[in-house]
Image 1 (tube, rainbow, N blue to C red):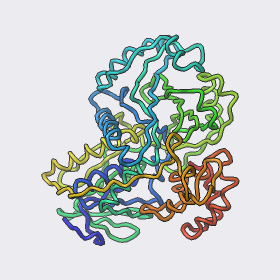
Image 2 (cartoon, rainbow, N blue to C red):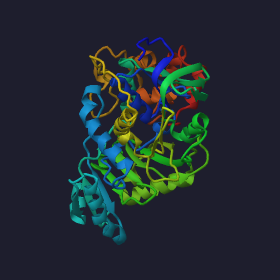
Image 3 (cartoon, rainbow, N blue to C red):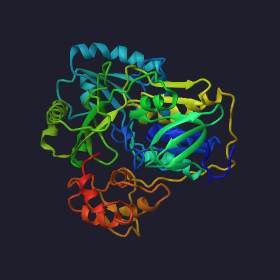
Image 4 (cartoon, rainbow, N blue to C red):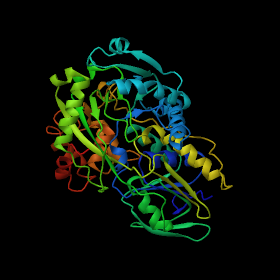
Length: 469
């Protein structure tokens, strides 16, 4: 194994810097591999991982025996094990799966039995009265529910950022703006042709998310699945609305989607969404006024008091759904190549577990690494509302974004740190700047000045991206 970090020779090349790619890079780096992460976008999390429900799921409703079920369970456990060492937030809310019709109520026992099959044995059936006792603002027509105590709210961006940051602190390399154009395997090593030149690695792991099937085609000439993006649209309510709920409110899921969720966010807002709409476009997640209206109506049906609260933002994201229900993880015999595809809405929860599974698949090849003698544990700067923020600390150089209380020091550190942001979208995800009630109206000019040395055409870029995520 090479130990020259300036070299273009790697043990593992991970294609894609979404939450799955970041977690895989961390896992292999901590096992002792020399890892490069290759991302075609300007920043990490620019694809499917930038928009999700920000819930750490237990996997209670996953198909028993599925890859998804095992990865979510393992990912949930690993997050609880490491989150404090990486400085990642965990809001212990629990979740209620609520039946609104008699037919949904009849399905609750089946779902609880499935939860137990998936190792989530602490679920408990609640009557309508018990449900309303836990959630007094809930609409009166709730029939019953069951509680899943270990479903939690987390920060959807700090988690993958922390995974990759730890990978970098222990020797991994990230290459952004680095699209893979093709490549070949000579029987020993891969030579990947990228827009930044050739990268050589012993093993390639395809974690390209919305482009997983395309990367398979480019590198192996075939693929076992087709990505059919599934759009999810969300509404974010202003912070006072978060007082309306204590738990994550889940509907009775169907075969396609977990349905419309209502929950607090780690940033102190209230979230309603997502929708689930299949589309062909892998890039554009256009918002629909009709869907926004329907989401708002659904939210007010569940929590009538929502009608008195303002919406702060709306956003949409694309999930890499396939024709299959389960994750598509395949080790290609004789090619030193592993596909990690079809990771849909549970990717944030399963990432650490998926990374462990991929490493186990790798070990089946007979190869192994020597873990480093010392593992570094860098801490992520907190942006979650339930934990101490930088604006409360001395020396923060003043507040730039007054809606989200983002300090000049936080922005500077995001621009200059070891995994420095390279886009305004990345800056938003790292600091929350522009994500408050004014959506950047007041702070965009100052942000343009601060980012100008780092981003191209910063003055126009800041405003043009407001509300995009």
